[in-house]
Image (cartoon, rainbow, N blue to C red; front, side):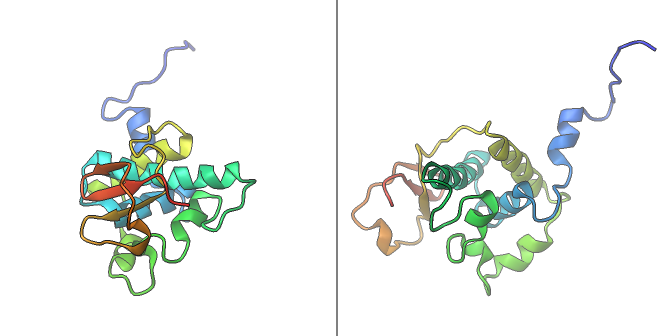
Length: 161
């Protein structure tokens, strides 16, 4: 046998691994569903920004010994009650995000972004933000603060404890 790699003509291994379903409940699956639920109306940069925010929370927790009120893993951060509204009981997005599959084009984008985030290869366009909200709301915690960046319809903050 020779050492020439097999090349598939209809897809590359990278494309296949980036769009294959993630195991249910895995960090990539939960993050991709969070991204879809929170940012599916945004351009890719907006989806990446929400993923970076989740990773900033994970990093902050790890920097503090692995414990922080919002959790220390991707799953804990995404599923912490009242942090990402798409996961709240009664939120109309929750049944949708629980059922979405890789057949949905935007969910495939979210899977690719989630894989990059979980692998540590995603840039952080939020400048270290750990909090955000849409332009349509004005939460009390944001009063008197200036966003570190505005990406799409979201304002990101890197000065909230």
